[in-house]
Length: 124
Image (cartoon, rainbow, N blue to C red; front, side):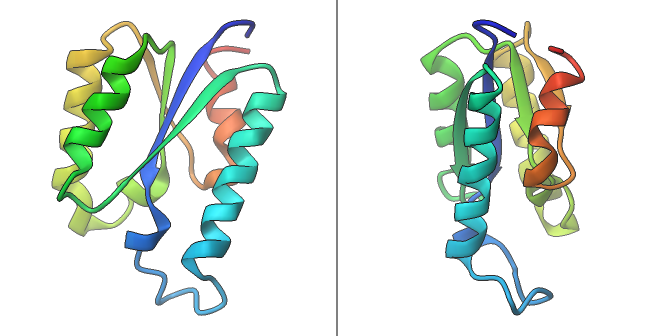
């Protein structure tokens, strides 16, 4: 765990379709994501968040983050994987991780709350 570097890639809530969750706002979701990233950090991991749009600058943002340092673990959020409309973007992100961080373990969360669990599967 010590010095384990983690990059959490997810869809920026400003670009998420929250219509099925009228009680949520992009700001609330962002606060929740930030709290979960802090939880991972408090557990002793060196974690950075990489929130992306639906494609306009997403690849460049992910590439810049992956080139910025060596990561041991890449967590890819459910908001990027679940909607069928984002399949192509999801594939692009996976391929960038494969090319630019081949040494990293890839894990997936099902929601921001289990991001720490996703990291711990590979780095207990």
